[in-house]
Amino acid sequence: MQSSTKKDSRPRGRPRAYDPAEALARARDTFWRNGYAGTSLDDLSAATGMNRPSLYGAFGDKHALYLQAVERYVATGRAAMERSLDGALPLRDALMRVFDGALAWYFPANEAPRGCFLVGTAAVEAVNDPAVREQLAAGLRSFDKAFERRLRLAVEQGELPADASVPVLARLASALLQSTALRARAGDARATLRATAAAGVALICGAAPPVRRSRAK
Image 1 (tube, helix red, strand yellow):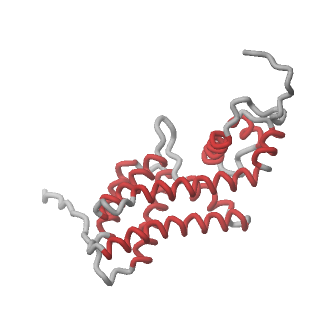
Image 2 (cartoon, helix red, strand yellow):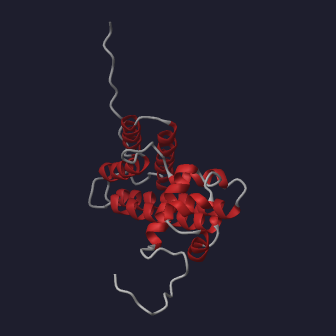
Image 3 (cartoon, helix red, strand yellow):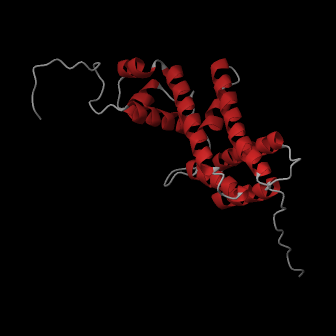
């Protein structure tokens, strides 16, 4: 490594490899694992490799950092949903891509099931924190709207009847997604949750899921 007589203009304590997106992702995962109240500044420092002054300089206090993590999570989730809800795919396939993508987030490899970051952490803090409540509501609405846009296209393309209540179906899809997140964190098996999602998607698409009848003994 070459030496230099120039002064380093970076704030003191900030790692040379500092990456705002990576630091925010590490902070998000720490909040996701421990919850907002259960996450300390020391936890965040350890996760990001940044000391407290550096954290404050880059993101503000713990509350501001959490809000930024929520905002980034919602934006990432909405973008992933919109990619999955490709209008070139049949509606059933597009909806299942959303749920398969969500399950991949809710069940990280070699880790305990963690569910949805937004629902799992913001729903708790929203009771007494107006800023978190506003972000939670905005995030849920954005997911509703993503489903709604794809369902309106399905009506236009004849995949759903013309009189289908698109806003209601969109909220139903969102509710199924949120239930999947909660049940993942509660310990339901991934295969069980996918089967439930498939049944819900079948109902939204207008076809009842197949019923297996047990043989009489």
